[in-house]
Image (cartoon, rainbow, N blue to C red; front, side, top):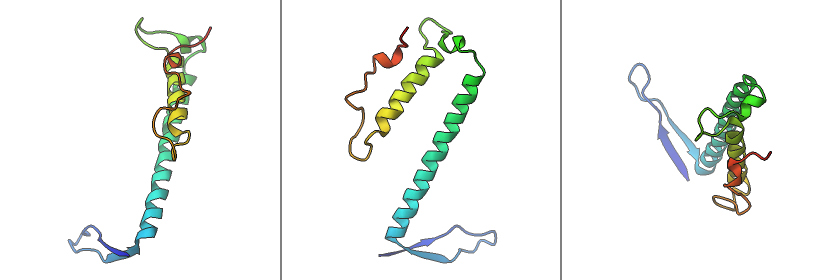
Length: 110
């Protein structure tokens, strides 16, 4: 199957040439682009989190800014559990995994 795609108009307001490609190449290109985007986004947030945690002492990681708030340590533990659950067997299983205990993800032992 061949699909035609017309690109955006150029600065002279003329339509660009029609590009033809096969459906399998479109699927592979889309998958590769999506994977690159996921990795880039993950690395961006990972770097931001690491830079934020570098600015506080270990003791401050457990500090509460409000009695009803979670500390940075609890938030990091919760996000780690969420990502592990979400991406474990993501091709064959959907959603929350049975071994994730959400009530303990909001508590730091000790």
